[in-house]
Image (cartoon, rainbow, N blue to C red):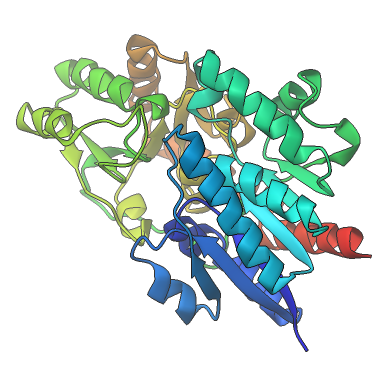
Length: 370
């Protein structure tokens, strides 16, 4: 009889797009993989991966104690029926309420703190509540993975988790056979591409402001924005703002895409002016495809975007600094840009291969269930 293992994230889309390699590896190791996530239109894709899906409602931006208690009860009910050998959680509410339910049932827990999010960027009452919840939820976890040392050090310093329970993991990893360098060809326009959820914390406003500055002296450069609009988040950019940017010629909004590779092929560089990251998927994918990077000098981004090697870095929340970084990149000759791109691919190959992540999870599961 197959052993059951449960994965839970705040969107099914995330599981399909970022955890499919891990799912396949777990299945090859003989596990029956179950996903607990909202039914957001990607359930069929989960089923196609051979995953059993139990829909749960997660109000990612909500602060209602009643809804959160209902979520915790839902986790408890499902986990009690399934009795998995381990619970794997990502994002705040699955990490908190899923973990608490699993602990109550004696199920080993492995967490992944994939980024600190708005609650840790803007310090206030919400931050204090989130800290208390994390401290309770992580207290008995077998392993708590962090995607950069800055986030781990912060959690340890604030006594949210004991250092002995922590480990570092290079993001969700990247499938180097799927993301490979490809030339856009001669005569292609100069495109600076940002791939991200449309949130203020991702630096989308700074991207638009910097685009205006750059286009004043370099009208030949195009700025493209790819990512989810209308996301449930307190810092979300509204549709009217994006439409205004398009109408004034600041940038082109590409919508969302299940496969970002065709857009990456057309880009000269990928930009991410985020305020803070765990391990940004957009930069990992761009690096794997041999692209130079332009990013903020903040935790998470600097794990993959390295000044003087494959990237230009700028000051966080500073459109002028971002514009200067873009202009410095644009001033490079084609050979130097190509060399930066090759360095990106080398870093991805050496440090971020998805097989590394799969092996670390299997080790953590084996240790937790021994």
